[in-house]
Image (cartoon, rainbow, N blue to C red):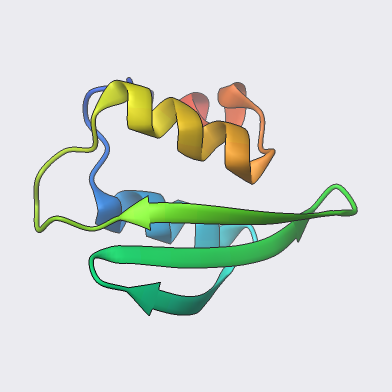
Length: 77
């Protein structure tokens, strides 16, 4: 299923990150911090969790950059 920048919730982002081996290190307020290795490099990703609201496109772009996982895997898997 293809996804766009506009239909990701925090729950779906977390599920995607966990599929790639990221794990929750700690939580501070409504922000969940995930760390993991991708392609031999350590990455830390901050995911804002605000209920079932969609994550804003600019925030999602930042999450994608923090994770190091290419955009094609985010949108076409």
